[in-house]
Structures are given as structure tokens and as C-alpha cells.
Image (cartoon, rainbow, N blue to C red; front, side):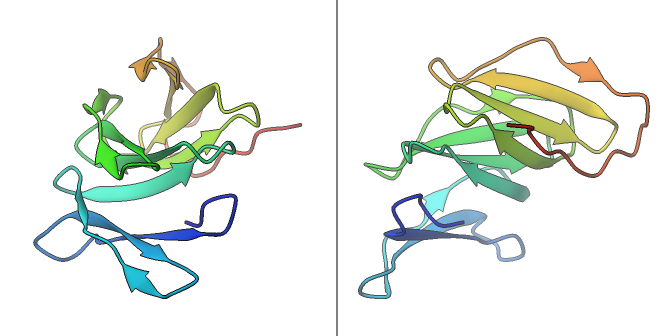
Length: 131
């Protein structure tokens, strides 16, 4: 995942023992210190304003990371086994789709989860925000 300004690439380590996200400075191809996330990271998304990276973990949490400081905030609880995150164009909400067909909204200003919605299909595997 690349920041909207194209300056930082975030690489998710899903198989190694560290369970981290590593920021890489695109201009110099230099890795910065890895950022620890949950035990089984599965998906990531960055807000269009470039301020926050969200990393979903299969145990049912989403870790917000402040891009400016590479600092992880407290995890947000969502439905178990999240595998996709989309963020509204105004960067105000993130929506997390979990494998069981649950969509959990997150208010990005407070990183708080809203009421989850269960979709009709329990194996939904994708989301798109309409403009």
C-alpha cells in the first residue's frame, strides 16, 4: 500500500514471526523500523488524506497507524477474520469486511467501531465504495 503522495510504501509481513508492517521510503528505497501489529495481519488500507494506515488482523482487530510518526494506536475490535478495508473519500470512515459477511464501520477521527451490519451472503469477499 502506497501513501497518496507516493512517498511511503507499506509492506505487510503476514508469514514471518514478527507480524509487522514495514514502511519503505520510495525515493531512497530505505526501510524504516517495522511497526508491530496483531498476530495475524490480513489486510491494510490508507486514508485518502494520507494520515492513517489501518491494518486488519484475523483475530478481529484493526490497528490504526499514524503515518506521520509510524506509531500504532490501540486496536479497534471488529468481527473476527476481517479480510478487506475500504475508506471513504473524505477519510471519515473505514469499513471492514469480515469473512462471515459482517461489515463494521470505524469512525476514523476517534478510531471507534460502530454497529456491525451482517450481509445476506455469509461469504462476501469484496467491497467497493460508490462515488
